[in-house]
Amino acid sequence: MHSQPSIAQIDWLQHPLRSFTYALGGNPHPVQLVLPPQQPLSAVAQLGKALFYDTALSASGKQSCASCHDPSNGYNPPPGRPKAGFAPLGGSEPMASVGARLSPPPGSGPVMLGGPHLTSPGFRPPPSLAYLYRQQNFSIGPENEENETITLQQLVQLGQTASHATKTAAATAQAAQNLVPQGGMFWDGRVNTLQQQADGPLFNPVEMDAGTPQRVAAIIEGQPYAKQFIQLFGPNVFTDPKQTVAEALFAIARYQIEDPSFHAFTSKYDAWLQGKARLSPQEMRGYLAFNDVKKGDCAACHLDQPTRDHLPPLFTDTQYEALGVPRNPHIPANRDPAYHDLGLCGPFRTDLKNQTQYCGMFLTPTLRNVAQRPVYFHNGIYHSLEQVLDFYNFRDVQPGKVYPTVDGKVQKFDDLPPPYHGNVDVTDPPFNRKLGEKPAMSAQDMRDIIAFLHTLNDGYTTPR
Image 1 (spheres, one colour):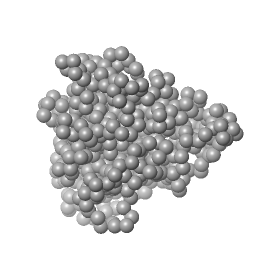
Image 2: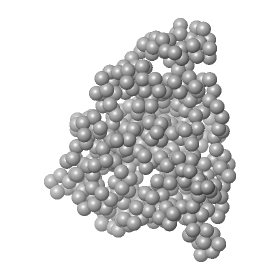
Image 3: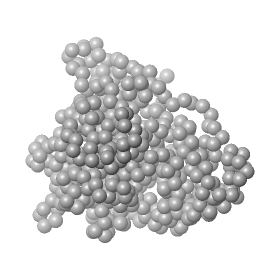
Image 4: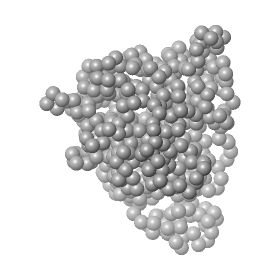
């Protein structure tokens, strides 16, 4: 994932011809990207598609995989979630206090509703299902090439003693040596495969709530695609309900791997990388600020360059960070002040529950189709990219703009118990600034970065 530096690290004065091309929004070094093959779906993937959209599998009879992962919205949660409730970019009123005062409409909060009557709220907003086809298994540390039998607990011990290099957009290769959690699926990386990922929501009582394998198998056996099951998996596929469900989950995974819409790479930025599009002046400024260590430094975690073998960037290093985003009062579980979502160390992941150095860490998501997400971060606290950029810009220098104030004291990192505040990243830019210092980004920088982020939406059509 860590390849050549971006154009933000190039001294344009040393390369006047490149500078002229960049100034016009072009790419003087187009790349021939290695894209996933475009070919008809296999019979298994076609079956998986039918299952992906089948609402009959849910307890309500009204919810499918596509209900929470909208194909028309980048496999993000569906649009139409609340957009109001927080101060605008650079606004004078504290974002958290405004958010606490203005409640979203009933049933349209930061989490989805599921269960038998579609009234049971979830705990986290669903992450996108797109661009997971290259996701690695969960591990701790750099790529494990020398000792494939090392256990997770051994990796944890190594991570506790290893030194930590500051992660910046200008030095991702150096930071790649850090022994940190990475890979896996869900916000806490608790499963490794798309098959396991599909299993979670299917049986989760606050999501599809499918009940038992026996119930699911009986429904599948009565569906029009049951004949495909027999043709693909043999005449005895329905004799063992657990095997029936396993084959169904396998088919859903194959659909996600084979269907190009799950990893389309059809954004304007992809076209720009290949020399087929020009960025507007604002998009180019945003790209530079996205990579500038002294401004956004976004590319430190959201890698934006092709790999050495020309695979297109996924805009994530798949690592885990504790960012200390504000507590979201609109998540029903948060009405209990004793409840805390601690990410890697619980409550849904249990194998790292005693590794308190990871409490508060969540997976860095892809930024592809990010402008289409209805809510942001693991708790859906923000509803616009403007609010997200405000958080990065003001968290440390003006925390009163981000967190609630109680009895005159700003409640910084209010969604983490105090013993875990030390896990929050205060080292990597722009989080290395101190109270009262100048914010890393101007309002114009943030508007420019948002313009660039919109170039990551799939569906761009190259002008003829």
